[in-house]
Amino acid sequence: MKTLKTLWISCASLTLCTANAQAVPIEALSFLSVTHGFTVSGGGVPAGVSSLVSGPAFDAFSVSTGIDDAAAVLAVDDTDVMPGCSGCSPSVPFTSVRNQRTNRSDPTEFSLASYDIESLIEQDTGVDTVSFAVGEREVSRSGLAQTRITSTGVDAGARSEYGLTRTQFFENVGNAPVSFNITGFFDAFLLTRYAGSDGVASASTSISWLFSGLEDGDLLYLPLDTYILDADEIGLGVDFTEELTSMPPAGFQGLSFTSGVNATGSGAFSEVSLTASHAFLFNLTLDPGQTAAMRFRFAQFNSVEYAPETSGTGTVPIPSGLVLLSSGLSLVAGLGGRRREEHDPEDLRGCETTFAFADD
Image (tube, rainbow, N blue to C red; front, side, top):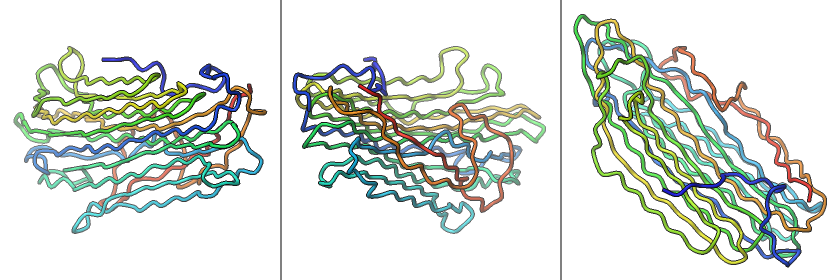
């Protein structure tokens, strides 16, 4: 396993400049596409178990772009969010799409950032479940950041990020122990590419299913296939990292996957890609009166950054992101146990974003 030095390198610390002060042309690309999900006991917990799910806690969802050029304009800044309906027939997925693009006078020179999220939830059909709960969930998502500068060298960059957490609770309301399965999977592809000097392109993602409220032996993990990992590297200045943690080790209850790819400007063409996939099963046993929690979390991050050695003055203000419904973002946001109505959509939160370039 290789170690990724960093997933975000500030312009102030970037020392990849060549003798060419303008360091153009350059093109940087960061992309990822991930699908993952889980099914609870075939779509519904067995008799004797009641389940409910918390509302989603959004860790982040923002895009930002910038070019240190007085003639640069914000050409695109679009947001399209559609609430989901798990109680409809058929179910309707929650979707969230965000695109932003900044152009120079010649629009072939630009910075852009985007994400595209789709989450489909089927309700739990267990006979003892009276609250909203997830029986099956599948998430398909992508992220992109890209910058192209071909004339004079100026600071430029783009960033896209998205992440949320949701916790599902399982309570044994019967008089005897109950066992049931939760099956899950993930399939991830990440790519970064950099042509030129004086910059970096990075992409990363994480997915986790973490359990609490259980004693030793209450949770068993079974891989349903071989964990597949493949990485390709072209050129200099490329690196990747990945880590799959599952039971055992002792004290770890669940599964966690993280990965990242990084391509830095070496003066030529550099590219690194990573593909990973896995399917697995958890067997959960609850005693009468016992409650367990499964925290399901995912996050993604894309960024590109270009900082030529002699590039002007420094800070580029970026228009704020659209503020949606409510606030309270936190990278370590906790989850409450509030219940949701049957047709409650995924909650929406917005934040104000600023992309700043360091002075030379």
